[in-house]
Image (cartoon, rainbow, N blue to C red):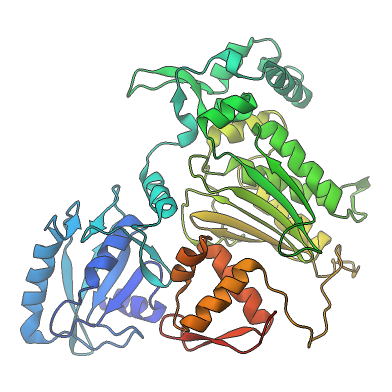
Length: 477
């Protein structure tokens, strides 16, 4: 490990894949929590002998060999880290001070430290042992196969909606007149679309989860995954509940139609010409939100998918098997298929385009719809936020009425935001991860609520994200 790389790490600072520990004369006890969380998440780099702010404090020379020995012994002790793991340490001298560099790769297994499961996030190491949803998601992330390919050997053709299969054939033929689905029977279609498979590990064969989700009768779908649900919510006047709602628990093709209909019902469609052809940019945008929610969801996770239309934004969230973390940059975005079989069928019937086109379309048409770029966040819960309050590129007024409340008007909070405020009152040092535990919401949702509260002048953050605290500066309702 050369010094330039170490300097680069010090300059970048702590984050999802970098952690500093001081360890002047001995190893800090929480070092092993970090090792466990790096193994469980995306791997990372650990520097011993460095303060949280990136200042090199160094390890006492007379203690460094003992620290090396203690570290290697401990991580190979299954009572400490289970399963045990082999990691090496590199000694580096920076400005005359000794530090230890440890590279921790992402593991193919879920690890525990002292019997607890730790996961990594931007704020540090999170004990998720008692959070069943997060633990389940972590195990899913370690799987090397797509859950859409799970075989249901006792599911038969009779358990599918045959009219829906015929509809898919017509949609595919409308895309291409000589489409092969036009002349094959239902069982051949399932096999050609990879919806009927043999599991070569178990020897079982049958219709897959993807086949059930796409063409299953409602009772078949809910028998395979009882938690299946897409929640559509309009929240403009009644901010605590909703003004309109559609609770969808059906196949993905009908789900897509109902999502599009919900958008058409509750969003305006400004005039827009693409060349000489009028194009519904509202439908273009909502089509991408709908297909993303249905195609890229991790269906074995019980987290319910939501698409929410509010006064100033469209917001969606769904369970996810992440391949990265943080906000997606459209400039260097590399698409990764989450459910390639489902995506393939959607493409054949004209409900989706090639992989990666969705984000490009959202960026393209968002500029004309409300002069905004969507924010997509890749985490265990995938979120898409599309603002609706700015003027479009032609200087037209917002597509929705903006919230123009007087500055002195009291802020009306949702129930989740009230819970966050009460939690901050009780403990100003409370972390986002603790708020996740208290509210049962995703980390992305907590981050969103805190931003709303900060923008509304209700709370502020004093100090850094890691060592600071929350302060209530306004009195909400």
